[in-house]
Length: 305
Image (cartoon, rainbow, N blue to C red):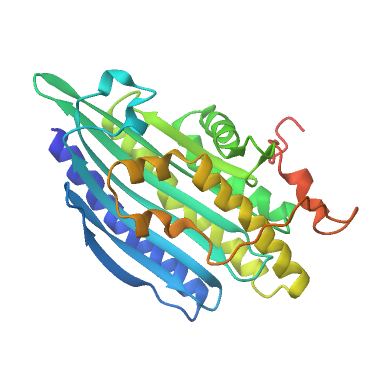
């Protein structure tokens, strides 16, 4: 049964990668995704798809991977020491989009599935994933749309699901050393195995399938907004925060590196350009200063506002 579950998830994820690339390439209008397949010496491999210097996306990637091994790496067992010594399969799709226009937010998402096995014991499996939005010049209507789609994906699975996974996203994508969120959040879930496999798998599919509905309308609304050197410099400065999170706090990056994953694919999430400026403070009441009020956990749908 574990192998059947793994095969079903893998089939879905490969199809999701196809659909994401098709939708994003159509929105870009000029660029195409190039594919790079790879093998992992310890077991498994994947296919990375990257778009660069397109009509919208300066850099983007949609990566599929299926890696396996004789034991889980330390990053996976730190919170669950009872899994130490188990063999594992990890399969997932992750994507990151870095648009050129500073008015279009960066966005990230992933959906993944783990099985940890040990002879003589039942397999332990769980799902994880989510998506989040990182604007530089935020527009409230865009943020509300993003969260409405996220909530709609969650609603069939329980009245409290969106609120729980929205709060988890706010907490996970928090830069503790900067005392700010990475963006305006979205959904984040992990260790999902409560209920049946079919129920959990259906939720993963709902999240993965809703991403384009959440993101592409924002791309369409913002891709003709005018920008210049000032906006570009601010975008590159804020991209530095994205790099800081991925290298300092992100568990997925750590798992990929510790499990012997392909470094080029793991670090695909990095922006093509970023910059750091010492003690930068935006001018009061400027468009750049507006971002600060968005980098805090907030009920964007106005449920309690």
